[in-house]
Amino acid sequence: MFGVLSVGPIPTHVAFIMDGNRRYAKKYKLDKCDGHRAGFMNLIAVVSYCFEMGVKYVTAYAFSIDNFKRRPDEVKCLMDLMLEKIDELLKEGSTVDRYGVRLLFIGNLSLLPDNVQSAAEKAMKITACHNKAFLLICIAYTSTDEIAHAIELSCKDKIQEVINEDSGHVTDEGKKEKETKGMDEGGDRDSGDSGSTITTVGEQEDTSTGETRAVTVADLERNMYMAVAPGLDVMIRSSGETRLSNFLLWQTWGSPLYAPRALWPELGLLDLVWAVVKYQRSYSYLQKQMKMS
Amino acid sequence: MFGVLSVGPIPTHVAFIMDGNRRYAKKYKLDKCDGHRAGFMNLIAVVSYCFEMGVKYVTAYAFSIDNFKRRPDEVKCLMDLMLEKIDELLKEGSTVDRYGVRLLFIGNLSLLPDNVQSAAEKAMKITACHNKAFLLICIAYTSTDEIAHAIELSCKDKIQEVINEDSGHVTDEGKKEKETKGMDEGGDRDSGDSGSTITTVGEQEDTSTGETRAVTVADLERNMYMAVAPGLDVMIRSSGETRLSNFLLWQTWGSPLYAPRALWPELGLLDLVWAVVKYQRSYSYLQKQMKMS
Image 1 (cartoon, each protein chain N blue to C red):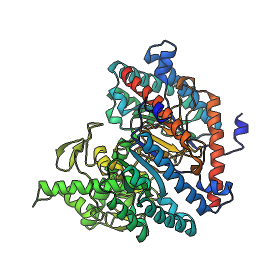
Image 2 (image 1 turned 180 degrees about the horizontal axis):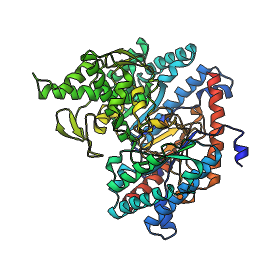
Image 3 (image 1 turned 45 degrees about the horizontal axis):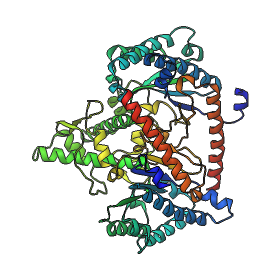
Image 4 (image 1 turned 90 degrees about the horizontal axis):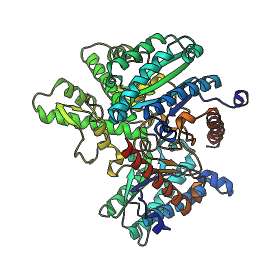
């Protein structure tokens, strides 16, 4: 089956909204927590199919910032599951081991309980030298929070720029920005090519519109949590729902959304193959469109 | 038919990605421009159905910033069509007149040719006192540009806040917003509850995460072009495609996307009714979910 698929283009980056764990639990009269457990187990299976197929980046929406509002016992169960599954993923013979997967936890990790945060950081450290495949687990994540965070980092970049340019005489704007910002948790984002042209200190030309802006679209892109991965090719949400639920809004701007009917724990290889076939059709249509225009 | 629908909840705000005009032209061996003309005509029909059904806000993606990259003759044809249709919409007996529609042009209008920009501004002025229904036409729009623009305005707010504080003036949020937002074409942004708490000058607590940020999610929301309309309920993209193509990414975070197969000029009342029925089903599911959690 993978041979047939590989005749067409294989998506580089696939993302999943794992919807339907609770409905699965209800359907089989299970505890909510067991629904989530079944969901986690299926994630490992689906991720393996993806890597087997040649997909290099898989992103999964494991826990939204809004999920903290769920009942404390459900949140606790999810956090415990997270700890257990991170531990399993680091064992010999696991998917991570077999496919040489680098694990990346994406989101506002400081919102997590200390033990989950430490486990996530440890897993990222241990797998940091893997580069055959990438599994991005979005946890304590929402897209609007990611954008607000990217703004914070972009503003910091600008302030640094102003300081570097005018080391004794900080301009009014820079000074002001310095005073109003700088409380961010920080990080080690790649601050390479910004895709924009510097016009005056702290201002750049936005390449999409040609306008001068303090923070450009390229700045934001560089500072997104998801900047570690290439653009998204396919978004898949289980259980037939077609909402994005504040997940990868910025990154989904040009990629199709597929919504197979299966509840997440029941999503299988065929659903995945079907999504890739649809992607291949859409890909060839887009190529044609580009030639037409 | 509308009677049956009105038993369930009617969406307040529906948005359309009008995809398939060029394929329609190809299918019927028409000039590309005639495909777009058929598309504009169908927009008026679809908008009328929506208002008839009780939808209060309709948003249409008429022209993306990326569309400026199309062939000059196609861009010119679209701009000429825009002028012609704006003119028609302002005539007596038009949809605007019949339903008491306020026209709002959403996007980076400064990128448009002068005559289209003037026509859009004139139409907004003439219909400014209408309040029965709202038609938002996104033109020279992309979602990433909207976000970059909202950041710009949010930063201006913060700078003004610091200036006010530094010069010994008591911070007056209302005054500040008035001073910094004079350039906005909408004119009447809702500057009510910001959903965030001011902690120190220029810093606010982001209510979604409890963190202190210079620019919060609530600041961005207040400064979006689309802040003139309530949250989106349904996104409909014609021609079966499920991509958002950089349209209302921020606003689509929780609303479903429907993708009927019809090319835009052929999208009819039944497609619309079907989308509303699906919305009603999804609505009742979401209500149940809220009760469950």
